[in-house]
Each structure stands twice: as C-alpha cells, then as structure tokens.
Amino acid sequence: MRAPSLKDYRVASPEISVIIPVHNESANIAPLCDALLPVLNRITDLWEVVFIDDGSRDDTLSRIKLRSIDEPRIGAVSFSRNFGKEIAIAAGLDHARGEAVVIMDADLQHPPEMIETFVARWREGYTMVYGQRTDRSDETRIKRGFAHLFYRLFSKFGEVSLPEGAGDFRLIDRKGVDVLRTLGERARFSKGLYAWIGFESIGVPFEVADRRHGQTKWSFRKLLRFAFDGIASFSSVPLRIWTYLGTLISICSILTAVYFLVRTLLFGTDLPGFPSLIVSVMFFSGIQLMSLGIIGEYVGRIFAEVKRRPLYVVAEHVGAAAQAVRPAVAVQDMKPSPSERT
Ligand code: UDP
Ligand code: MG
Image (cartoon, rainbow, N blue to C red; front, side, top):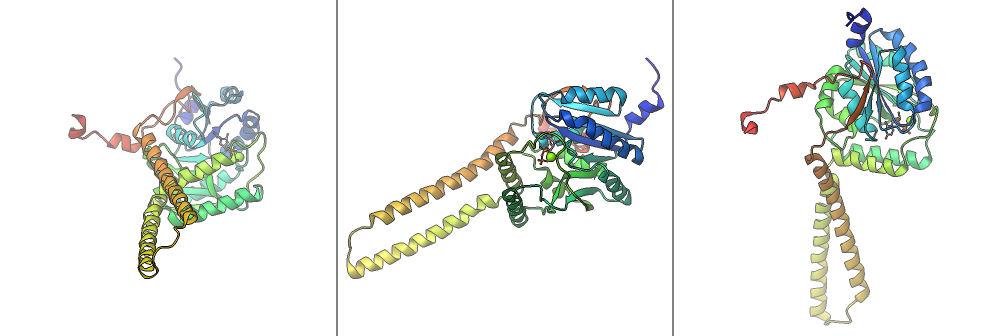
C-alpha cells in the first residue's frame, strides 16, 4: 500500500462540502462541474463534492464516476431507488465531512458563484447562509399563487417562521449540520427544519437561473403533497380546527333546537322540511369525513415515524469523499439508559 500523499490528506478533511441531490440529471453533470469546481478552487483547496444519486435511471452515476476518476474530491452516494430530494439532502448531510456544507441543485438554477458569498458570510460567523430568490417570474401564476398562500399559511400556523423565497440553496456550518442530522423524522420538510434549528442566519438574494437541461422533477401534485407535509410537520392547527368547528356547530344546533321548540309550542307543528334535512345531513357527514381525513393524515405520519425504517438505502459509494459517514453528535451522546437496555 502506498503512503497517503498530501492530496489524500486534503481529500480526507475538507473545509467545504457541496452536496448535490441528482435524479436523472445526466446532461447537467458536466456543465455543473465545469462551473462549480473553479469557484471552489478559488475559495479553498480543501473541498469535496458529494452527489447523491437519487435513483437515477439514466447515466447520471456513470458520468459522476468519470469525473471522480480525474478528481478524487468528487464522490457520490447512490441510492437503491428514488427516495425524493428531501431524503437525498439528509443523506448528503450524513456523508458530508466539511466544516461547512453547501446544498445546491444540479440543474444550475443555483449559481455556483454565490458560494463565494456564502462562504464569506460564514467566515464572518453566520451558522446558516441561505440564498433568497428575488423573483419567481419563471414559474406559472398558479404556482406562484400557491407558493404565496403556502408561506402565508405557514407563517400563521407553523411553529417556526420561514423566510419567503429561501429554498434549499444554502450553506450550513458543521454545528448546524450535526443538529440537523439528529432530527430523524421521515416526513422531511427541510425548509422547516433549517428554521427550526435556529442559530444565526442570514439571507443572500440571488436570481434563479433557468434550468440548464431536462425538466423539473416536481409535478404540481407532488408540490401540493409537499406543502401539506410541511404544514403537518410543523403545525397541529389542521387538527385543532375541527374542535373549534365542532363546538361552533354544536352551539348552532342547540340554538336551532331552542328555536324549533319555541316555534312548536307557540304555533304547533307544520310540514317537516325534507330538503333542509337532507342538506344538513350531507353537510355534516362531509365535514366529518373531512376531519377524519385530516386525522388520518396525521395518523399516517405517526405510522411512518414509528416504523423507524432507515431513511434511505445506499446501493453504492463512489470516491473517497462519500465513503465515511460521520456519526452525528447525538448518536455518540445518546447512550441507552439502563432502563432502555433491559
Ligand atoms: N431531485 C432529486 N430527487 C427527486 C427530484 C429531484 O434528487 O426525486 C433533485 C434534482 O435532480 C435537482 C434538484 O433535486 O438537482 C431540484 O429538482 P428540480 O430542478 O426538478 O426542482 P425545481 O428546481 O423545479 O424545484
Ligand atoms: Mg430546478
């Protein structure tokens, strides 16, 4: 075995890790690396890039491997199937070893030059530096409208506040990364988690570029699902609504009962109103089903959490960079208590 060279040492302890979730991004790998590596080299020699291949079915992984041969600081973790971007980010945080971790998309919508600004702010002492998109003009009106509605709902009901326009493009200090890694929830809403951990953070405005190759992987349905995941993970208001609504409806029904009682005593009975009966039966059964559905959503999430399956399954590691999983701090700290061991 040859002795480790200085280069190996550098690969072994990076200062900056860049994690990039990729799902069928074959055509973007080369342009991304060409744009990203010069930026990283300007910042430091001690960097690594960890791609998380989220079950790509094209030749994304082999293109990364090609790159990794020339540049050992590029590595990849390849999932056994598609687990979704949120989980891919979690895996990236698990495998990144840098003192600061940058999360970015592979489609060059997140300009790599911004990383220099991120790092500058991080060196000033910020734990979290996030890119804040200045406009959403690339998106359709409906999508923008829903995004806005989502932020309003979330800021009203969520337990944390989300800065509008902040996405996954960000730099997180090791301190923050280690905390994020201890949050083992399955229904991951990263934006909420970033806000939840707190720490000193700052936004840096940037303009979202157009997607370089391919199409967005997010359908409208997936986005809606994601929005509900976000609200459900950070708020129990959707559950509580039904208590209020139920109370209100009960009060109304008592008032109606009193009204009918008085009317019958004074004027006797007349022909019972079938239409109003049917309408109210339908209305209330609708409300009940809806509330059951909402409760079901939460129960489903509880079920997913209690199964405690691993978040993802790694099929393959590429390059030295992505081999070692740093233990999260809390895993070291959390020795089982005597009662748990028995
Ligand atoms: N992505 C992923 N898994 C998925 C969907 C997307 O890893 O199931 C990656 C994708 O390759 C890209 C990033 O997440 O690097 C953002 O995806 P996309 O550009 O499709 O989303 P948008 O920019 O439209 O929000
Ligand atoms: Mg994109």
